[in-house]
Image 1 (tube, rainbow, N blue to C red):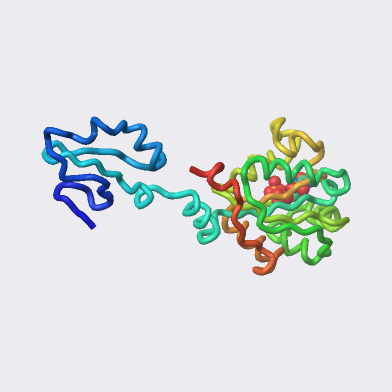
Image 2 (cartoon, rainbow, N blue to C red):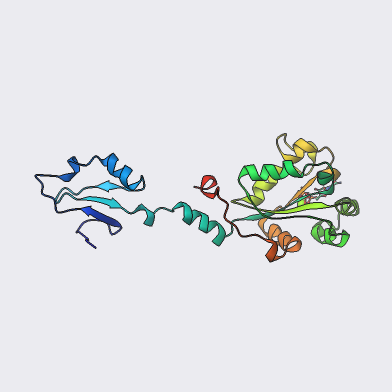
Length: 224
Ligand code: RTP
Ligand code: MG
C-alpha cells in the first residue's frame, strides 16, 4: 500500500508521482471521477507532488448497511401501546397501527389478547388508589385488547403526543384520542408514560421471544 507523506491515513492512492509539468488532474474531470467511484469519495491533489486520491469515506461515514445493522444490534427506545376494548370493538385497530407505521416507528410485537382482570390490575397498579380504578378495570377487561410494542427514537414521548391528552376533550384534533373519542372512560388507547414504565409494561405483556428483532428496509430513509 502506498502511503505518501502528508496524506491522511484513510485515503487510497489511485495515481501519484506525476510531474509538475503534466499535472494529471487537468486530464481528469473531477465529476467523472466521482461518477466512476460513486459520490462517496473526496477527490484531492497535493501541490508539491500532484496526487489524485480518493478518500475512503466508508471508514468515516456510516453506510446504509451499518445503519440497518445498528438498528438491530442496539435496540432503540420502545413503548408499549394497547388499543383498549372500545378501540377494538369500533374497528380502529387498522387506523391506529397505520399512524405508528407511517410515523416511521417499527413494530416489534403485537397480539390480540384478553388477559383478564388480574393482569389489568397489575398493568394499572399505580392507579389502584384512584376512585375510578374499579371502573377502569371493568372497562379494560371487558373484551380483547390489541397489545403492541413500537420502537424508534423517542418512541415513548412521541407515542404519548400521538395519543393526545388523557381526557379526549383536552386532546388536540390530529391526535388519536382527539380524533376518535369523547369520554375519558372510553379513550380507546393506552401508551407508556416513561421509558422505565415502558420497559416494565413490555415485560408484563410480552416474553423476550415475542419481541421480534428485524431490520426495517426503510431504516435509512427514516434515520440519517
Ligand atoms: P393510559 O395509562 O391508559 O395510557 O392513560 P393515561 O396515562 O393518559 O392516564 P392515566 O392517568 O394513566 O389513567 C389511565 C386510564 O384510566 C382512565 N381514567 N379515568 N374517570 C376518570 O377520571 C379517569 N381518569 C383516568 C382512562 O381510561 C385513562 O386512560
Ligand atoms: Mg397512564
